[in-house]
Length: 289
Figure 1 (cartoon, rainbow, N blue to C red):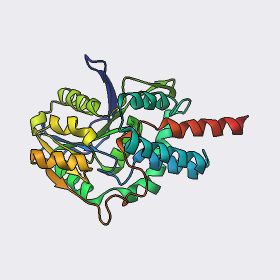
Figure 2: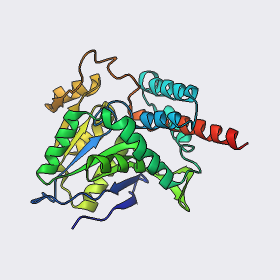
Figure 3: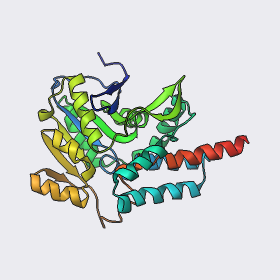
């Protein structure tokens, strides 16, 4: 029997909150109940940042202007190249994220994500990463996406790809709408490792039998938490660490590495999403005003 869809919010002793959402995959014939694979999303499973493509889709639907989109892209680049996600910048990112989906109905965000995935995200799924995920599914292992994007967006992507579920940032919901506040911290850096560890307890996984995939050195805590780490399309720092630890490296990019991705791609993409929705809210208020 396929497992029912669920969203779980859990807070550990450090006050970090993880959200994970399961889809409804058919169970494998001989599953390994203690093994799973964890895939970062941006530039690991997908070319570019999922939240950026979500923003592109919203812009195409006239929710906000191309100027707002350009500002969002610049902020992503600034976080990656200049800020390097120091504590102060992370604090600013969290404050921005508070406005990300304020006032939006959950079902509207999920509907838009489904539409935008089919239009803009699906063509940008790395075929190589998708094959890696399928190999885990084929041997009965569960496969989870782990992203700084809102867990609802991760859930849609996981469902579309036929994966087990998603771990993501949790936005507070009241009466079916987002309040503009986060539940716990952003799903980023060490928070990913903590969330994976929490999920392992809930799902009865043995992390030493699990595999994690990422492109970014920001995910070193998650990669180090499992028995097998794989660097996918790695940045320079992660590539250096992968060679140091003897981790497997997979690179599905072609051509000039530094400019291959036409849009900013970074773990901070999910963290500065407030810049997008701030534009959405302003445009909506202008129309309603």
